[in-house]
Length: 107
Image 1 (tube, rainbow, N blue to C red):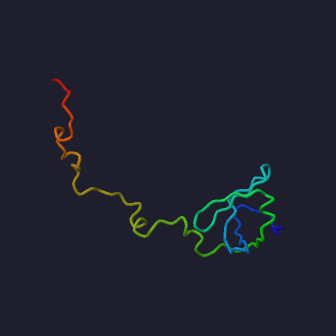
Image 2: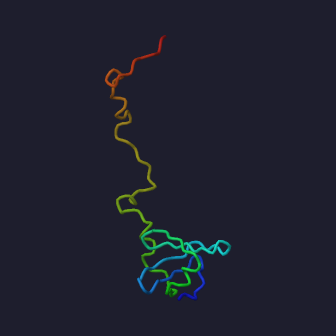
Image 3: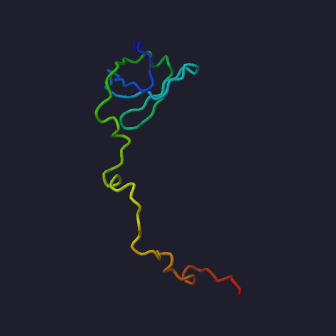
């Protein structure tokens, strides 16, 4: 049984299943502990369940951000502005008659 008090920002390992997680919220008033696994999944436990778990405190894993990182192709030039090759765009090539829009403007 866990006698470890949950501390927000600390990392733990549940020894029976081997899952590694960080405590991201602890509400003493509501008696709940919110954890986030390496893959980004978030779970909430009541304090009684937390105490029944076999938990040990650990150092943050090297790849602790892996669940939140962009894929390599998404990360490349993420801050660079993107400029289309053709500024006119595909919508400018559509004629109103082709999509059933009548010209309601009278001059």
